[in-house]
Length: 353
Image (cartoon, rainbow, N blue to C red):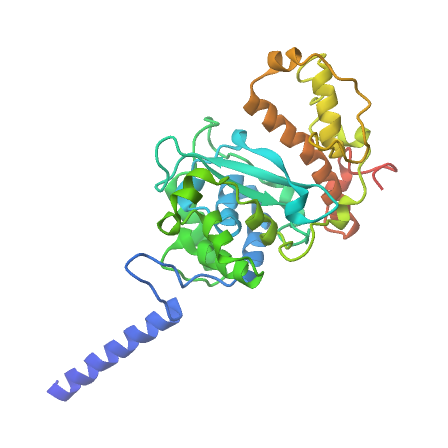
């Protein structure tokens, strides 16, 4: 082999290497600080989540939530590994924020572990019902599991489990990234920008502490509800869900998560609370489907004897989910995408139709 031939081979090898790099990474731009720029486009997330729902029998809710939350909440991967669903609760977004006539309820995740969280520091993530019910759902959504293959209900999602699931779903859609569990940050921020969400709102929701002052990290309310509202499609318009115009009867709502009414025994205060939540009555201004609850006020001491604050907040979230599940199920069944829900109690019969 002559010198010219060796030079040609070297150039060919360099050319092939450059071609492989361009083919796989599609003009990757990465800095020393691991800024991710080789992620997916926001529209590709819909196809990925559909694939996860279709294979939900082999996917746990934590795995799905890990991919979903990186995009819609900008949560980091290590923070998502330790999310405990018992720490979830619901809050009412103030009307002056969303300028809507309906009640905007945010589902809150409490995160207290992660590589960027200090000891004793807590971060909150928020998600709101999306205006498009068909964006993230497939008919098999009811098959997913909260925790699979573990007897410890507090055991977190392992790093390998999170990585492998994210890698599999990305490869299925021919998305090649250098940082598998981080790609949602870039794609989520791109979608937020396209929706017109201001940079400072995105900045706070993602907790980018290198750009935040002590005012934002220590004194302002660390609840990214404006960002969640924007990602749900309501940044530049009032919050309004067409499917929330009809309130399911309380008798039908009681078929979802049965037994919630008697979980605290004969407690009049709890009975009043659960009816108010199902009617979406705000205890702060007493407005909802009915102006007043039919239950009388009870002795406040009874509340203290029931359970602690965290457990009550978790149960209240389930009361609100009754209404959400029924409304969404009705629209899915009407569109022919709700099977086999229409065979379950509460999703069939003259009252539901």
